[in-house]
Image (cartoon, rainbow, N blue to C red; front, side, top):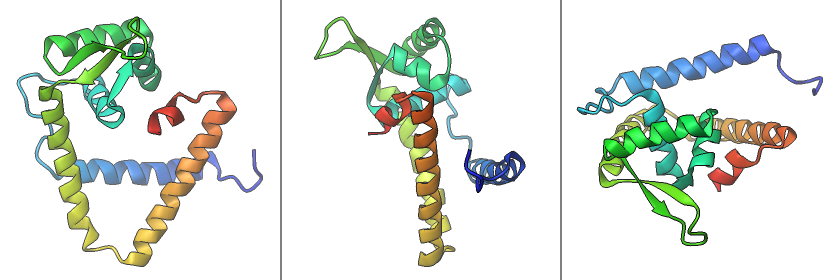
Amino acid sequence: MDKNACTEAQFNVQLKKLNDFIADMLSDAPILVETEDNLTMSQLRVLLLLRMNTQMNMTQIASCLKIHVSTATGLVNRMINKKLIKRKMSEEDRRVILCVLSDKGHNITDSIWKVVWENAHLLSAYITTEELNVIGHSLDILQKAWGKMKEKQGDTTSSELLK
């Protein structure tokens, strides 16, 4: 580890600040997903993963959620029953089954992004260009550190999904 690396305690303090800020920003809005479906956090995470990646196979979903493929399959099956996502065959390999958002899943993620976008837009009135550049630079640092960590672990799944 780099001798200039932050201590775990220093990192935890900053991570808690970030977590608290995000929680506060989201809690200011009305309940993001008020549906009869009573989505679990795992289901919400799958919806957002599919929103960001368009389509994913079961192994990719399980890897991102850090769960076993059989657990991901059960989760996806429940979401299919709720008509949140659909399965489709890969065009490259008909043996591969992909998960994609249904119209209902798109509507839910649209409402989430709308709340996040509105809050971020309101916040932008209170941030200078210089401060925004600091935030952007900080996010670049986090993304670079994340990539290095994943590369060292030999896990390319997350970085491949972000492309």
